[in-house]
Image (cartoon, rainbow, N blue to C red):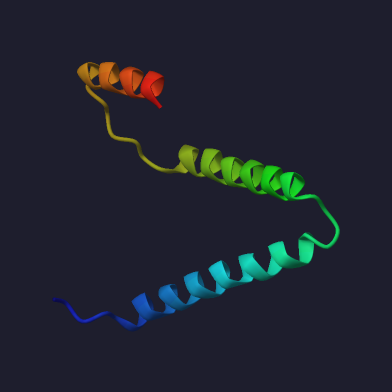
Length: 77
């Protein structure tokens, strides 16, 4: 197994801080807002970030045969 680089440790630390801050922020937000409002804002912001990132990431071509699987999965889920 390869030894983690210092930048890997830094990224892991930032991820931990971000994740931990999320719990603190939700705890404080619950004092002012309803849980459904907090969940709605978090889902909206997550979707907005993912949609924005989608424009900047090069997407691999998906063979047309794979679309059948995606459509089937959509109806199952």
